[in-house]
Image (cartoon, rainbow, N blue to C red; front, side):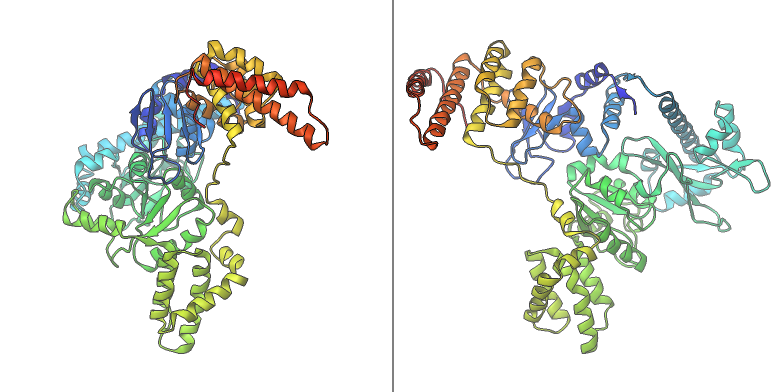
Length: 603
């Protein structure tokens, strides 16, 4: 794939407001030249997340994540680098250029843009037709009768497809699109008797967009009893993939970030009703099944997903499948127990935030239970608990679920609940669980749809703690960035002494040629170097730099290097050269002098 020119990337970085972007995910407060807040990448109570608005970088001193404004969009939006650059360029009106683009790739990109354009135009036509045409009167009455307000329907671009067989077919060609493009977009299909006809006719239309708001396809609901299918979506094609689509994600993205969770429902009107009632973090799967791609997309926006699917058997089975789909993903799944026979749209019909229906739905979401607890209770509800044999079978079925949970208060409470439901001593359940843990831990994890290594990898690795010496090295490099006029000399002097940390040694070599703008031009395929340089840039803003502080850090590092040489000589059974002892004493004297001129840098 063609690369963006470096000049284009830098223009995007310059135009992007990293504080505005990060603030959609966590509240930031200004602190001097920096902004601070709770880290959006891990749970914490004390702010350790820092944003440098000038350098357009961020770093968390708690979990170690860091990067520039493009990296942040990649991580939080689940985008590839090129998509993140394009998203920021669109948002801030920057024109980007590509280097040596393969003509075939350029053609494919232009074709995709054409398909998105014709879908956008058609969705706008459908939306206008819903409110302006007499043919759509019954559709309007149906939607408004379900308690959906016109304002919310317009916000989601809900429309109506005329019943005439060739409306879009003709309009699309008049707008300059080819028949092949209309077919590829899913708007037109070939008829059984030859010719072409509109894919959607006499249906209420719901535009389906990706997280960036780009059209992917359409969903259509029947308005007449004789229509063969109640719902018809765009055919699978170049843009629309049911398995990786979430209806409403474009409008819910910001609310998901602020709430720290996503609420998943089944239908288009469920989403609109939830947003109308103030639950803006709601999205819908295309049907009842949730896919690995959808879980991955949600995990890029939130660490908790609440499933508020219908309470019928299909909905329960979909939630249990979600447990297997989410195995190994860094996301916590919970279940809101919807009343049987009532979907979110019915519960929220016409409700505004704070009204009874909205309060009921919000309460169900807030009281959602962890998916394993829902799984256990579903198994017990469907088991034959009227006989000892039935209770034994029920115990066998819940064991893998309990074993996969790991030690927790939630599991202990479930153990007691299982004992009560089976009319058995909880100690018996605990003994069975201990046996399952010894021999069935791996099997239990695989029953949940993953492998033990995958489950373990779902937890973010803690950053390695730096030694005191590495912290000193880090401090000096950060000071060099903060005061490049003095720092360049120290970077050159460090070359002879070297640095104990290989990562910091690589960063020093990079800074020699990029001290004025350390983040510019960092190789995208070297995440380790990018992380280290980002940490240094962020730290450079934390403390004022001075020649005295830089000299003190350098002397301390030099003294440590001399002491290592002395220790190595003694370890080999020899006497260290006298010059080393003299040098150590000289350095100690100079350090004592400089301590009076500056504070000891924080370690």
